[in-house]
Structure formats: C-alpha cells, structure tokens
Image (cartoon, rainbow over the protein chains, first blue to last red):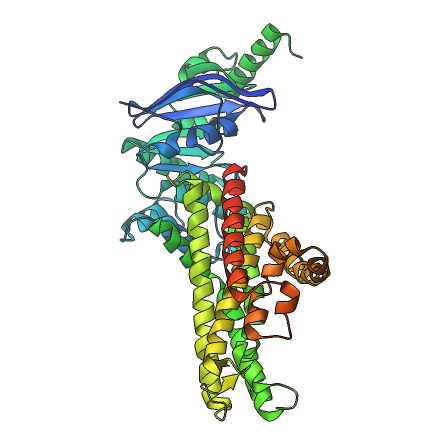
Length: 241
Length: 257
C-alpha cells in the first residue's frame, strides 16, 4: 500500500531552483534512502514534504488523498530534521513526555529500551553528548506511533553501538509497517536498512534504484563507488566540472 | 490547541527561572513591606501597598524575559520543527504561546496581589483597606485598579517584545533587546509629552498608553500630560495590544524555520 506520493514538486527561492520535478512514492513499511552531495536538496525536500517550507508547484497525496503537505494529512508523522530539537533544561524523559500524546508511559519506555537510553534518560538534556542528543532526537521521531518517519542524517555523532541500536529500532518499526525516509552520508550504514535509494543532485532526482542494482554497476561493488560514478556521469553529461 | 498549551505550561513549570524569579520578587516584597513599616518617612505605606510592595515593577522584567524566550527558544533549540510537523499550524503554535503567557501573567499578578494583601495585614496592620486615597477611591479600590492598569500596561510591552523576539533566534539576545526596548519606551514616552503639548494627535501614540497605571494610581498630574482619560488609555492599550499581537501572528507565520 502506498502511503505517500509526490508528483512534480518544484521549489524556487529568488529564482534559484532548489527542487526540480521531484517524483517519489513511499509504501507502507518501505525504507527509502536519500543520498546526495551537500546542498543537493535533501533537507529541503524533507522540509517541503513535512510542510516546514512551501513549494511552488506539484501535488502530494497521502493515502490517496490530495494534501498540500504532510502537516495537513491525518496520519501521524515523526521527524528528525538537521539537528535534534530538544529542550536542554528538561531531562531526556521529560522531552519525550512533553511530545507524547498518550497518557500511559509504555510507549516511551519501549522507545527508551529500543535505543538503550535508560542509563541517562533522567538526566538533563544539556548534559548530553552529541551522540546522546542525536539518539534522543531519533527517539522523539518514534513517539506517538507514527506511520511515516523522516530522518535526516540520523547516525550523526553516534558510536558503533548507538548506530546499531538506531538501525535495529528502524528495522523493527519498518517490520511493523512504519515507512521511513532517511537521508545519510554514511552509505555503508544506509545500505543496511534501505530498500530503495533516491540520488539527488542539484535538486533533481537523477536515479531511483535499489541498493543491489546500483552496486552492480560499480567496479568494486561498493555503494559509495557506485554513487560517485553516477554523480560523475551526470556531471560529464551536463558539462559540469 | 489544549495539548499545545499544556506543553507550554509544562516547559514553564520545568524551567528553574520561573520559580527563582517569583521567589526573588516575593523576597523583595517582604523587604519593602518591612522597610515601609520601619522607615515610614522614606517609604509611603499607601503607595507601597498599591504598587504591591514594588512587585509590579519587577513583574515587567519577568514577563519581558518569558515573552522574549517563549518564541526564540524554539528556534535556538531547533524544537520549532517538532511542533510544526506534528499537525499543528503556526497560528495554533503562536496562539498557544500567547495564551500561556496570559495564564502566567495572570498567575503572577494574582499571586503577588494576594501576597501584598497578606503582607499588609502582617506588617502594616494599621493601614486600613477602606481608608480614602486621593479623595476618590478606597485603598483596596486603588490597589485593584493599579493592578489592572499595570497588567494591561505589561501586556502592551509583552506584545511589542513578542514582535521583536520573532526576529531573533537567540534567547539571550532577545532578552537583552527586550529589556533595552523597555527602558527606551520609558524615555521615549517622556519625550513625547513635549510633542503632545505641541501636536494634540500625538497623544494617541502607543508609548503614551504606557502611562495607564500611573494615571490610575494618580502619580503627579499625569492626566494633564497624557491628554487622555483613564478610559481612553484603557481602550487605546487594548487596541494597540490587538494590533501588535496580530503583527506577531503575521511575522511568525512568515518566519523561516
């Protein structure tokens, strides 16, 4: 079942095209990986889909119903965009409690356990390391049983164990039918969770493929090599240096 | 909307400054009440009581700090995105913040008014609530009108501070600018008295409206300087508060997250 469809999304700021004819669809339980260079438009695309910034043209449908953006849809959304949005004067637990819409704490405790955060969750967030804050940001995106979760660089600042915790938590939720849209520069990690890859270059999706497909074309079978190859080909075909 | 207001109140409740500032004001009130009792030549007990033993002068600063940070902190901590992607509109977010500030300001004024009355009975028992003040009102009437006038005046400042804070993304900068702005308005208000003498229409400027509580409290012959009645100042304050809050909504809706 397709949850989200975006068709011909275009965004311009002061004449500069930030997103060009973006077409994508996200199925239930699907994990889409979004990759691209810095400034390719990954965060802008997520912001547009979430309704955090406007766009000039295009159509969005959520569960078949046309909406201006996900903020106007009836489904629950989770997101971690750029930096984790947390209140430093609250404990990690209070940050979760603040945004939790239910009355029972079972869901909060489940998320804390999934992400192995129980050791420090009752400490003030201002005392957290970068990785702890990042985990809390991921935890916030999991709150309230969202149907769709957007994660922008979720592995930023995480140690290998924390990366494994976040990866397992993502896969667990995807198995339960939650759809994910994840951007990351850590391609080796992205390929462990994603089904579909979108490559964004200068605001344009230049490739939509699976991890297996894209790796076939690489000389050494590595995702990073394949990604760089695609970018180089795109540059040479468009005459860029 | 109810959830958003609950969230805002939760944040206020969890902030240490909320209670520390209130505690400091209570302490100042107690000290002033004791001083008014012991050095009656220096402090006029009636005036001290009607100004809630100095509490209203400090509440302005507390409210400037809270109003400056309530919007700015969401941008500084990046939490604004958490609010906006969760099916809340920007209008709901900003209205919930204004309602929270309203609840907080009412709580502050009611608490300090109650403390002031308790202090009057404990420290200044000879002061009668029914005694005549300025030949027009009883002491308790004067106290309540001053409280109301001060509350409205604070909201005029808050609405302007909220508008200013929409521009900034750093809470410290926002608080400093808010406090500087407050002092600047007092100076401008004084200068504008001269302009009002020359051009009658200047009396409708928003800075002149800040004199409401002084005029209610009968400080000097302020009515001859504002050229407005208490009723006109009251309505003027409400209209300006509505205009500034409307501008806050407009600016907040356009603000880039």
